[in-house]
Length: 148
Image (tube, rainbow, N blue to C red):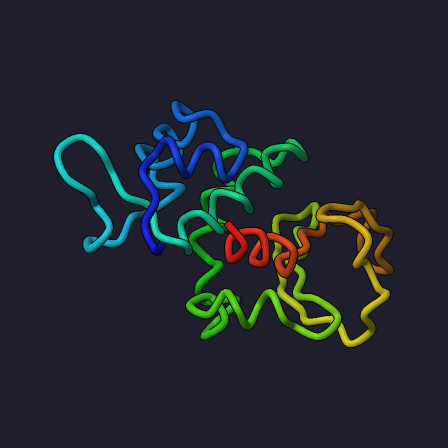
């Protein structure tokens, strides 16, 4: 099951179908040519569903749309080969995390300590060089896509 219709993507991500369509129309979610679907109905890949889950977490933290678009567009380069292998993200020992700093910078890290930040999908944490950062637990989101 590698493709989802918009309605299924909406149900699996917790984002209303019209909002999923909006994120696609404004370029936050970019469909692969092989996943464009037929007619008016678009098909979303597992990677697209993963992106939608990241978008939802960031939007819930009041991150602006322009920044969400930039973050999602940078995910493949930040995650590298892991982006194509959701199983690798889901099974990262200690978890894989996306950090969004107040100045707009983002970073990706695989934690070495399984107890660090494993308790929730999103937390605000105090950083030495930053007042706070939004942290997205990518491992939990990837696992959610895989368990569908």
